[in-house]
Image (cartoon, rainbow, N blue to C red; front, side):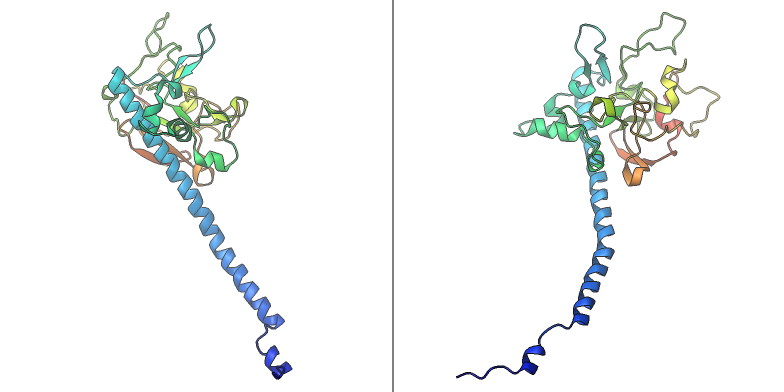
Length: 270
């Protein structure tokens, strides 16, 4: 018959209440230290994926230009007539966006048009055609709009460009994070028509004039996802302080709020 363990020997292996509280405190402290780091790492990963999306879109725009000798229109048909609506997100063929031969190419196309930081904010469109990026209103314009730089009336329509027509391609914005429109399923407008405080509607329409400085700061807008701001850029990264921008030469960079200059948005006079 085995002897029963003494009370002293059994209690020697048990945690006291104080020891248990110390262990819980240490675990809580580690969580408090690591959680912000993990949150920041996830945010950085989303920001990186957004930049990758824009680079993929840049590849698609370049492929389109190779085929058609111009970059695609931001909006080709505005839907105000009997013709159906059509913008750049439809103009870029699916295989440009996801890679030819990919079985999931349609889903890849949808993923490329969605900024994961917007998804994280629970503001992404839920439809198949949700888009979170907006184009430069001259380089990929709404070709239904009048170009009031060339006067007098009647004005010609905004035209399409080739990349090699534009000086300073490494400085020029082509596509960037767009404000999400609550009335169109939290998607962005395809063209940032209010870029630099609505200058596309001024007579010079984002064309740099001789007395203006390339280092002038542009008007960044209100940086909120509202109907009133729907044609502006959205600085949604880094706690609503950075916008990712695809440049005409294909590289992507982040710009902090109120740091973009005319060098990035305005074109040299023809």
